[in-house]
Length: 428
Ligand code: FAD
Ligand code: MLT
Ligand code: ZN
Image (cartoon, rainbow, N blue to C red; front, side):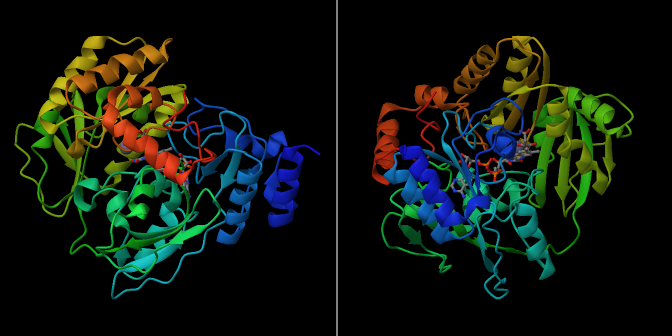
């Protein structure tokens, strides 16, 4: 019997045969990413149903030196949830229990495999809200969003995923469980290993549950306004203290979404950029700007990712620049005259740009040219999707040596055997 045979036998005995998938048909959805840019292969997909079963899987992987890739909803956009070199896929989707909401403290404990959409519905039932929202809400999981420190539409009002996390339960690389689900919002007990899990993309531990902060209901129903602008800095001028979202997209996105979703044209005139504001207090939109108010306007923004994907496999960049440089970035990208169809959209309030290119024959060149501009503008090469494998080389190239050394030591401390998602950050 090979070591792999022994490991598979161990998985089956721990989880039951039906939760250890090896047939090509059965694993297909786990080895290909949402965009179709990355397809890998796997020795097995394992689907534990409890933290104890996660421990057993990790223990078996450690014993047989089998690297593994944690996977939630597989909506990640940087290739981090895909087994690139035959790693075992550890799917967390069966960990889907949602605990009762503590309405007084406005907190809840949920399993890692609960989707963001299910959590939002759960919170709404008791008149509360979860602070993170993103178009992948019905597939993206709590564990995946914590592992990537996902941003989304409401960062301007509620902060990123990190801001919602009060505590975690994590299975470590040696199979032990570290847990802090008590919900204490303030602690002064030394360096916090749980905070390191946020944004670690499955490389430091397996998140199995989280204690999360919920928000109180809004005083009034927010309004949604779409404004046509000439420049993005004009759009930033629409940001107010009561804004819950400030998003933008360019003309190419609007045209593609109208065509793909068969939507009507929202504004009479054509504009280089469109800014969507969600707010409980109407911003003073200058009379010179064309604007329309309607909650259904979100469809234009939220349909972009799906629309771009049906046009072809995109090169996806997710960057941010200082707010004072947003026009410089847009102009510099236009100046590249990239081959293929370019789509520009993002979370304007954070200086975030999702630059997607479909039909370019040299994706690496696109990445190099755009990230070069970002670094030149003092921006960041990964704003909310993470590093994964897509940005690994650039991350190492653009991070100062002292920081890289610390990151390396953290990885060594948490995962000396390098079984946890070894390609992310350090591969490529
Ligand atoms: P996966 O894709 O399964 O995994 C992502 C990473 O997290 C991988 O490295 C994986 O190994 C790790 N991981 C997953 N679960 C765990 C766990 N339990 N423990 C440890 N590591 C784990 N992202 C944004 O930030 N903002 C957006 O607005 C946004 N919009 C999107 C819209 C669409 C239509 C799509 C398809 C994606 C969007 N994304 C967005 C990207 C994606 O949804 C997020 O990155 C999300 O956080 C991924 O969650 P997931 O459960 O699908 O994780
Ligand atoms: C978005 O803001 O729409 C998402 O991050 C997904 C994407 O980048 O396409
Ligand atoms: Zn985004």
